[in-house]
Length: 153
Image (cartoon, rainbow, N blue to C red; front, side, top):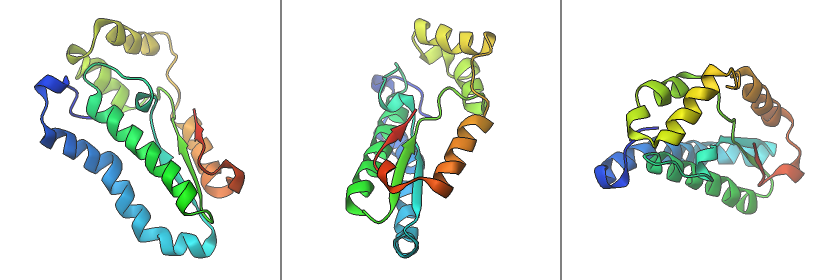
């Protein structure tokens, strides 16, 4: 999710790296598999984030890259009508990313956000990785065509 720093302190190069990871890698993969997905009428499941819809101080690059990824999914849904494309916002999942938010990136965040993410862990409100993983696996295997273009939270 880096850079986790305010826009005034960041650089375009740091943002490019974030977009390379969260957006351009997905575009490269999708481009490579489109011929097969067209033949099989396959499915694409993209991992978005609530940060694509809700901005947090110091999360600009991450949120913007995830919003762009959501837009990629929306565009694929209208351009590649034979392929089912959905986006999933897995929620606040108990992963290393959440640990980094609390421990590594807390100083860059606003106090209210820092407290919110810490309290989620303290109160046992983080989602287990298996939960969104199960949903995403089911979507890859069985997402019906009418779900194409939708985002799931």
